[in-house]
Amino acid sequence: MSQPPAEPQEIRLALERRLIGQQEAVREMSLALAKQLGGLTAGNVLMIGSSGTGKTTLMRAVEEYLAAEPRFAGRSAVVRMHANILGAEAVQGRPGEVVLRRLLDRAREQLGPSVPPEDLLARASAGLVFVDEIDKIRSTVGGQANVPGIRAQEALLTLIENEAVALDLPQWMGGGTATVDASHLLFVAAGAFEGLYDAVYDRLTVGEDRGTLQAFTVVGEGGSLSEETRFALRDWLTPQDLFDYGMSPQFLSRFGSLVLLDDLDVDSLCRIFLETPQSGYEQSRAFFAVRGLDLVLSPGAVRRIATEAARQPRLGARALQGVFRRVIQSFELEPGAFATDGAVMIDVREVEAALARG
Image (tube, rainbow, N blue to C red):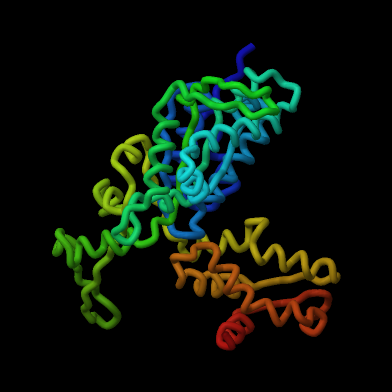
């Protein structure tokens, strides 16, 4: 009996349990994954967002979802790799082969070494390929041609476009050559695209589209007036901006969805700080717990930490780690000295004092 299809809403809810915020990215990923799991053609996804906004977290969430769903065992070969590795391999002319070999290795881990080669190839050819730091394979850097980046883009384009890719099989599969149907692979690429924000802003303010970005009047306290200019990359980004950045038109045209991740606001940072298992807060709670102590932060203290982290939007959630370390370090050095009735209590006053010390 055939398995029921994966519903986009089901996938969305599962991913949202693992990722806070970024609803647009979650929606696009859910739709693409539902189509791919159903054996349909799915548009590849390109995510652009500052460091720490959740690109890698979303990739991991998809991996965890597939691993936890027995229904999708036949389509759960997932590999995640950095684009700079592909760029290095491109110098030797084999990045496409590296991707397919990674998928075969993953299929072998899942199915075991005694599975027939055709089963391994079937699992690998229906897999997901996550390429992180895709902006590192731009075709130009500093006005100069970036040959590894050009070749890596071309190699990935070959994989995305072709239904029949010749592959030299590894020795553990018996060697020889096989033809891999790559048409059902789903590619998800992500990058921070450092400098893109400034390039688009400059285009609108001092470049060819100067004057497009208009200031507006803001009424402040006491009726005071001031002018502000608000700029959001998602409102002004064009394909030409990405071409100028160094992503070829042919390469970009193979991504059906372009998703811009939002910088994290204070509310999202508070939730990430409190609710994610890998947060510095959870790590410190475990540190105190093994010493028989509870670590308790007041809501005001949490919000003050998140507010400080939000002042570094280019770092996203990673800024939380640095801010919290400044607050918690002295408490961790002498846990018992700050304990009262088995608990270490931190309020806004302690946070402010730690931040003032730097």
